[in-house]
Each structure stands twice: as structure tokens, then as C-alpha cells.
Length: 225
Image (cartoon, rainbow, N blue to C red; front, side):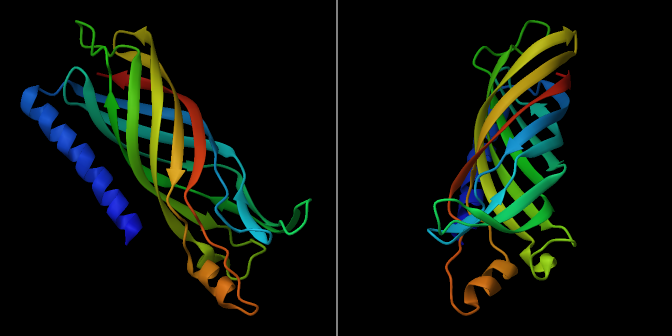
């Protein structure tokens, strides 16, 4: 329930700000941003001095659609997926961790984003370079059928997340720019039937997901206003 409340609150904040901006200004047009990034996730779940589930960093491809609400603000939706990602289940009961099992995984995600440009837009409608990004969404953790965990499909799970970051645009044409960005991503807890089953099996364990912080850096081509 707490995870759902976090998403509802984040959505209400974005919609509230969007509504205010719309009432005060006319829309400034649409822009599409296909991008390529590198995602560095945090530990997915763990129990101190026992075990951890640790995804590895991986390339990420995505696309984002933005709608301008004012000269200084826009909202958008986006999504993407990791490529060639894997996860290790490590024994951390000793000073040197040992990999007990591994799995090929993917972590597609969808999100909403609010972009704030302190300097607004240029007279021709083009965006100024710097933007502050705030958003949130859901990551879908998917385990490959050739995973070394028992019943991989039962380990498929979801994780709400929120992010904050900066974007910087370098113009390459009247309606296009290279958009560089970096985001800090906070995960609010992965859960799955497989993890619940593992914890319930004797001897009982308490491997669980906590708030975690990961990062993403990337670049895209922003086309439109």
C-alpha cells in the first residue's frame, strides 16, 4: 500500500503543477526524444551477512514524449528497456562475496516526467539549455527462462521508482538538439512470488528489498518544440 501511495502522491504533484501551468499559459508544442543511456542499478534485495540480489549495470534504450505547458515547464511520458542485463545472487556471509546463482534479466520501465527550464525558451520557441527533471514510474523486473533460480517466472516483479536529474540541450538545428542527461533513481522496493517463497522455505530467511539508489546517464536527440 505504501508503494501505491507514493505513486499516487507523485502523480498528483505532477498533475497539479501541470494544471496550474496550463491555466496560465498556452501549450508550447510537442517534442520527441529517443535516447540511449547506461543504467547503474542498486542492490535489488538483501539480508545482512547472508545474501544479496545484485543487478549489473547495462545499456538502456528509451523514448520520451514531451508536451510544453509554458515557457518554463513541460510534462512528458517515457519508457524503455535494458539490453544484455544480468543479475547475481551473492553469498555475503564472509568478507569476500561468492556468486551462488545468476540470471539474464531485463528491466523495462515506464514513467512520467516534469521538466522545469529556469531560463524558459528562446524567442523562436526553442528550449534553453538547462532543465530540471522530476518524475516517477514503475520498473518491471523480468527473469530469463534460462535463469539459475527455481521457477524464473515467479521471480518476475515490479518496483515503483522516483527520479530527479538534470538535462542539457545542445542545438543542432532550428527544431532539434542533442539532449544530455543524468538521473538519480530511487527504488521503493522489489517484490515477487519467488522471493516470498524463498523466504518462507526452511530455514526461514528475510531477504527483502529496501529503498535503493541507482543512476542513469545518457544522450538523445530532441526533435520538436
